[in-house]
Every structure is written in C-alpha cells, then in structure tokens.
Length: 338
Ligand SMILES: Cc1cc2nc3c(=O)[nH]c(=O)nc-3n(C[C@H](O)[C@H](O)[C@H](O)COP(=O)(O)OP(=O)(O)OC[C@H]3O[C@@H](n4cnc5c(N)ncnc54)[C@H](O)[C@@H]3O)c2cc1C
Image (tube, rainbow, N blue to C red; front, side):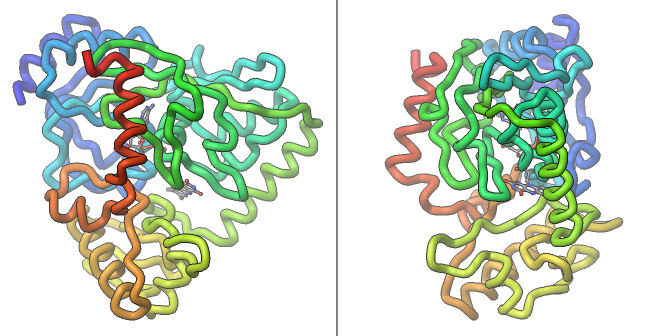
C-alpha cells in the first residue's frame, strides 16, 4: 500500500493521521503489530473526510476500530487504513426522543447504559456489561443478560468508506445474526437509535449494579476479549462448558492461558503474542472437536492472519446464501455497486 500518499492526503484534509502506529494499545488483548496508516476520527465530518481520500484509493483495505474489545490483530499488523473511532466531548451524550435513545457510534456501551438510565429510560441496562463501543456492538450484534442489539436497535446511520454515502439502515437491513451483522470492514456506524421504555432511574440503576456484580463474579479481569468461541447452538452445551469438560481450563502457551475462572475466556499477559493466542485457540478448537465431536468457531474478529487460519475459525454459516445476500443488499443500499 502507498501509505505515504494516504497519510499525506489525510493530513492535508486536516485529519489526525500517523504511519506505522502500534495497534496493540488500542485493543483489550494488548497484542498485535502496527497499522500502516492509522487515522483517529471524532466526528462524522472527519469520517467523511477519510472516505473522500479512500474513494481515490479503492484498492486499500480498511479496518474500523472501536474499543478493540473483540479484535485479535496479527503480530505483523495491518497493512491498510485503520479508522479509530474516538468519542468527542459533544457527541458523548444520548439524545432522547420519545421511546428512542440515540447514541454516537464511538460512545462506550457502559456510558450508553448509564446515560439512558439517567434519562429515565429502561431496556439498555444490559449494555453496561459490554466493554466496547456502540458501533462495534452493532457490527457484532453484541448481547448478554437475555438481550442483544438485534432486539434493541431501531436503525443505524452508516457511512460507506467506499461510496461516501450515509444511509439510515433499518434493523432488518443490518442483517443481524448471532454475534454478527451484514456490516463489513468498509462500513462505519456513525450513530444508532435504540428502543427503550419509561423507567424510574432508581430501578435502572439497581439493574445496572446487578449486571456489574454478575460480571465481576463470573468473568475474569485482565487482558482478554470476552468469550472467544460462539456457543454451538440450541441443544448443545455452551462453548465454555465444552471447553471446561475437555479439561482445558488453565491450558497455556507462552503467557497465554485459558482462563481458570471462565473457560471461554483466553487471557493474555506481559510478553503475549497474537500468534500464541491463535495457537491456544487452535488447540482448544481441536481438543473440543476430539473430545465432544463438536466444532466451535471464533466470536473474536481476527485481523491479518493467513486465509487458512481465518477459514478455520470462521463459522461456515457466514458464507451461507442468506448472509451473502444480506451483505450484498446492504452494499447496494450504501451505493457500493454503482
Ligand atoms: C471482558 C469482556 C467482556 C465481553 N462481554 C461480551 C458480551 O457479554 N457480549 C458480547 O456480545 N460481547 C462481549 N465482549 C466483546 C466485545 O466487547 C463486543 O463485541 C463489543 O461490541 C465490541 O465493540 P468494540 O468497540 O470493542 O469493537 P472492536 O473490537 O473495536 O471491533 C469489533 C468489530 O466491530 C467493527 N467496528 C468497531 N467499531 C465500528 C463502527 N463504529 N462501525 C462499524 N464497525 C465497527 C470492527 O471493524 C470489528 O469488525 C466482551 C469483551 C470483553 C473484553
């Protein structure tokens, strides 16, 4: 990639852009290499400015980063443009319009939960348990505590880095499925509107406290990306239970371990590498398949790994006709097929 050209063009558009920047500090695992061109954006205008540069360079790969709480970036980094979403002070508030709560794509989910509750709105308390951004949660269809984005989102305002178009996309058009959506690496969620109901703030605060306590009791702290493997499906045990009963709690390569507290979490530590995390994932996947005859797939997004490794960890349903059609419809809606 012509990183130098991109950096020069973005800098002359007034953007906060740097070449060859470490991505590890921008992720919760704290591993991975550098981004060839890393641009930090904190307003829709800045995302539009990035898309104007990218439209002159359609060959360049893109990666949108929120809080990096669901990303495993390879040790050799990402040889494209990394768009890092940072909340601006003015955009870090929710807008309440009747039953709808609207939040910016860079807002952190715990902030969304607390601001909604503070505004007397109920239904988004579960978001306090997701340590990522609203935009990342839309892309991943994040969920927990009996709820997910698919059940809460009314629509999202999405910008295509390829066409430059900004479209309000309905929940149906977002093509949600379990821990995913039809959004791709070229799409930036600028904002989202979510359905809520009237609720006393004290009730919502108690619910938030209950979610936080549950997380502290059941999940490890430290460097991880939450659940690594997707639950296999109705009727089967959870991925965590399968990993646990395959005797993998505490399994370690280098300084990377399967958590003793929650078997579907993989913990990184000082000196950890993305390669070691991927190796632990591969061992867990193979062992679970040997012991239980069930293949489990990654919930964490892998960036910059070999095609073989990506295929190994990607659920086959992601290439199903249904998902491919949903992705194509969304690309058409965003003006990418002209
Ligand atoms: C301790 C812990 C607990 C967790 N618990 C849960 C849980 O209970 N349930 C759950 O679902 N997840 C959980 N996660 C995973 C993670 O927090 C969610 O997937 C979260 O929604 C990711 O948001 P992010 O901003 O960190 O996204 P990132 O990790 O930065 O990116 C994830 C994906 O979203 C894309 N993306 C990010 N921002 C945008 C944007 N603005 N527009 C378009 N695409 C974007 C990225 O390109 C990437 O494909 C947990 C993680 C941790 C560390």
